[in-house]
Image (cartoon, rainbow, N blue to C red):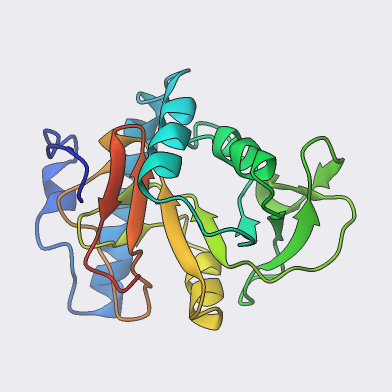
Length: 212
């Protein structure tokens, strides 16, 4: 069942919301760049202290992973939606957790086992990653984003890491983690951009058109 989640008034600049799915690589790149700029500014105004806990409750109530599933989360940067409450709740239910290790550009992410309280080290581009731990292949991935739409298109940061990672893990389930207000009418996307089947927000879980 799709969670009650009315489409918010568009905060996006007119040039971002018109003709977003460009027909040329250059046009797509320009559309994504404009969308990222607007999305970063908009997300900064959505931060809420109770939203991460509300998201955790909604996800566990509406779409909890099966017992034994390995969950890859992420350590939040800046004003990203914080996935740690849901990660802590999943750990308490017996799930093994992993965090991404960012490789050089052009490669997919890898994942290292992590448990609450274990040490982290600085990673590339402001990320934090486990200082040690076994390599794991996740069954579910919690995916950060700048913006999303109802078809499961995700606006990322431009490095392509999650698109490459999800393409390399076709059996894993990916769930976008976001504030409800990060929804936009249509995210600029090309054929290489992997769509998400689910988006979890503090307002509920949205089931998109992408295969689960």
